[in-house]
Amino acid sequence: MAIPLEANVSLRWFFVGNFVLFIHYLLLLFEDASADNTRTSLKHIIVLIAFSLVNFFAILVYYRKRYELKLISLQSAFLGMVFATGTILSLGHLPLAGFGWYLCVLSFFHFAEFLFTALYQYPSLTVESFLLNHSFAYGIAACSSWVEFFVELYLIPSIKYWPFMILGLSLCVGGELMRKVAMLTAKRSFNHYIQLTRDDDHHLVTNGIYAWSRHPAYVGWFSWSVGTQVLLCNPICLVGYTLASWRFFKERVEDEEITLVHFFGEDYLNYQKAVGTRLPFIYGYRVEL
Image (tube, rainbow, N blue to C red; front, side, top):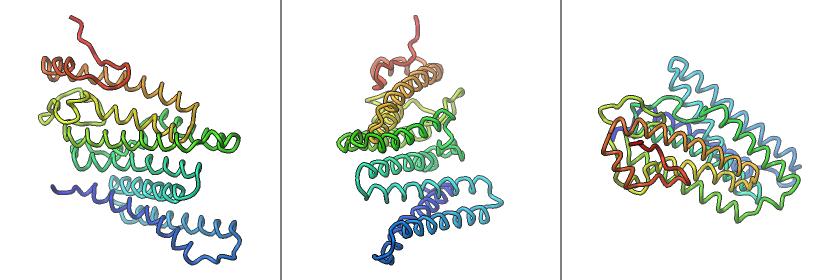
């Protein structure tokens, strides 16, 4: 399988972004053990910020005439740096290491969404396939979870209990794997957006993981979304994320299945009867006879 240019570019800059990790440990290797820790940390931060700015400037110059590749490179490099930062934090002490795990699963989710779309659903690929600008509400929810984590870490650090962090990490990893298996199984029949017209290569997929769930990608995303808040041990956002995600997927599944019934008719109705959604208390669109 030929790897598209966009996938190559995204991989290249994601790994360049991860050089933050290499530079961090290189600085630690040559630091003066007797030096003031605060000044040393400040120097590290300045060097890492400078490295990031140099890379962003290089992208702007190198791809100045290729707008889409520029946006792909900027987002990939940014996600690589976030992943590297998360890795650095995750190798430290709990509970802050839990936030590092969170940064890793968050950045990898968005990067992998673009990469898998580029590899297996290329006709639907856009610079928005990273899903970083998924919605305004998504951004507010993410920021709220960060605020809750650090406020609770400062006021009641005992609430950040490591077994829950491990459980949350497991939900995130499991959900991520399920979603990517679903994308890989559906190939070009998968799309980030509900399709209103049926393309020639859009087929009803009922094999593999789709024999277990009609919407395994949504099951995976739901698990990932809830898992991020279990990982952060955020009780308030856990309730909010669960309710908001459930409502989003309930509406999404119903809207999507209206089009699927229209596309595939009796075949999809029989599939509905045989296979559930596997999303809690979400049953999908029902045809009234």
